[in-house]
Image 1 (cartoon, rainbow, N blue to C red):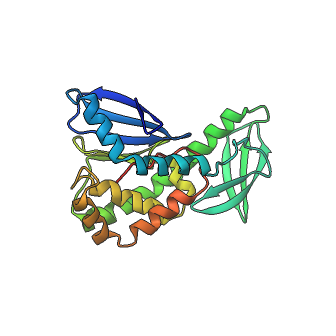
Image 2 (cartoon, one colour; image 1 turned 30 degrees about the vertical axis):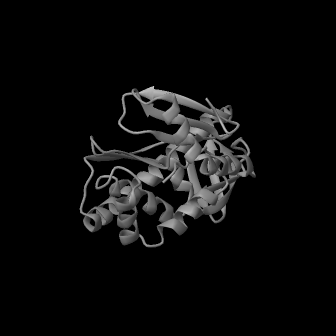
Image 3 (tube, rainbow, N blue to C red; image 1 turned 135 degrees about the vertical axis):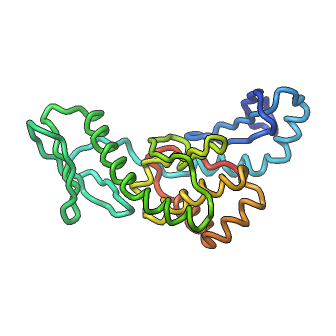
Length: 236
């Protein structure tokens, strides 16, 4: 479907409401709709949102991207918002990662591939973020008054976090281990609030204003970072 010169992918499925997304990395537009919605209704919905759609497309076109990681000495890597220079060391035994001063020392086997070094880094990030989650969830569960059945960490390409409301299951993107800790805290609150209100409506916003009054500032900060994974920002 073409609306005001913008190509839109339409997916009809068994859902109750229409959902609009502008997807990374190039700003592909997608509308998911209930099965019984007519093409004319979809087009009217898109026309009403065309200003927002164009704004998001431009944002993706202009957003700086992190060059592909090679996991070699001299490369910059981040932990909790702090920048470290990578130093590669070789060992015939176990892989490990150490932080010393401003260096991140990655010890791997001499013949390790780029993918293997990336896997070691991701598992390290996973461990780092998992160590932070119990205390943060406990803190905000008591404040908000909700508790998920389970939570975990996943390397996601299009979300900082997700909440399966029906299963009460929250997943946190391990990429947040690279960002300042308050960004992780904001995402945890965001997902916990979804256990109260599923959508990003005025009720959701009121809860966010109550629990983290400066959440919009943190959200803007998080979305301003140079992206080394493609995070989709949905309309709210």
